[in-house]
Image (cartoon, one colour):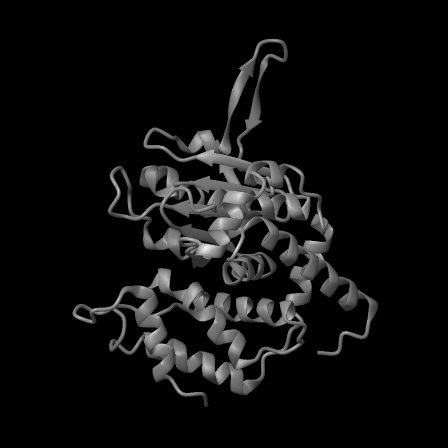
Length: 314
């Protein structure tokens, strides 16, 4: 990539600083850190599926702190109401009028912790915010801050007290990742090092919200060749063939996958999308939207990886 101009050199340095700082907090998870940054650069929302205690909340805090973004965390529970997220109007006697009190959704990074412990009505209250960056409360539409990024965590569906996310909700998440257990060396570093909460509290921003918005715009300028688009269309067609999945990926999913691939190319200092970029983000950006055909014997991610192996480069 021609990184000769000052903007791209400065952007490259800031992105490298962001990844390095996150790697100092989320130890031994370079692929998941890259996916999180790619999702953010692509202006998408991130779903993290894992058992409690894997560092999901720490990752969300670290991202917000490193980017100088306002952060809010909401613990989703069975009795959480939509108004607990969006806000409510309260009558104030002194003003003799109803005054709107915004909820925690009016932030830049919203951590929806254990999102599948809340009921479908509360889960759905996020749909408008995630798709249109606005909420409608009591008949009035209110814009959310820019940038606006949702990180939701989800417990395994076999745990007690969980509600499966509806397909329309899952489709609003650009990427879904799993942190998983650390390897032995990384776990030893965690045990011997500084408490993660203290480490996050000391983080200083390495980018500003304005830097992030500029980076998200730069993603749109990353080129995708006709051959690359042919490859993406072949992958999308394979998901719709009925051989691999019950239903295939939508055009919106295809656009999201391409945007994520562009973001990864930018992160790797290229102004064009390579097949490697598409392959690197495809499973994380598609598996949560797909259901393997009965009898396949594979989980979602494994089925997507098998499809990637089967579809040849054009």
